[in-house]
Image 1 (spheres, rainbow, N blue to C red):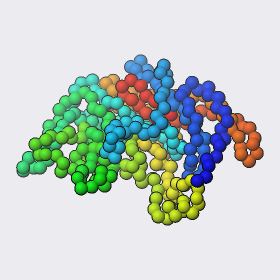
Image 2: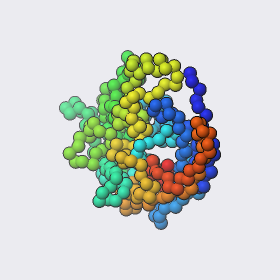
Image 3: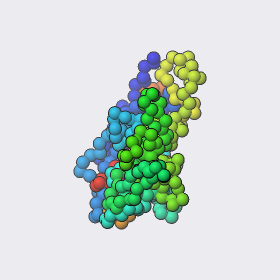
Length: 336
């Protein structure tokens, strides 16, 4: 096993006032990169937006809602320490709220101008409802109850798994776009039970509740369909190539960096967003549609050593591109 090369980044003079973290990662082609992460926290109030007195907290690895069942659980928070992203991510956590109780309302997120957005996604939140079984109709939805808040969790979208006592959990049949959801299989439910039904569904009136698409606003786990399609091919040919080289395993030739983007597909602009872009949410807060103004971070001085010439260089990052916009609907949101 080859030793990791020493980091080239020798000095980081952070003048952004943000949470900044330096680390190194391997990119495709066994390219070892020095990565600098800048993360900010803001308070979103009826009066406007301001920098939070609390610093943004780093998430060193993906955090699942149910750590005991990561295959059947959604992400509570996506890990920050990746090699990079080819585009931006926009995702939301917390609760979708209304001022008055309702059975159904539209929820959306838009990046950029409403007329020509860089990214736009809309879905629908509903009040609590359940699956009920009858001899004539099988499993059917109950009436929807009014509510003022719906948790933004993929466990409340269509999906789930089909448990099989004869197989280990990693061999169960699952709804690959969302293995954490509900409604995919009722085989393990007694017919007198009333399991919770999805409270998130497509905004289209023509879409089926059992749509094959992922519905929701939160971060997506690495092994779900919308991300797994970019992971590449880890077959016998790839294994032989790694053994032949005898060094650190490389990514497959068909690996795509879009694998590191964790937002739902429609919330991933095709390129990194300028930090001054405006992000607007609808149906997430009790107030009218909320628009988050852009923010620009200044002056992050870097110094690194080039291995070939051992020369000292400097770079001033005067405008930091934004690769993640994470909005918590409780009171604050983060960007990185």
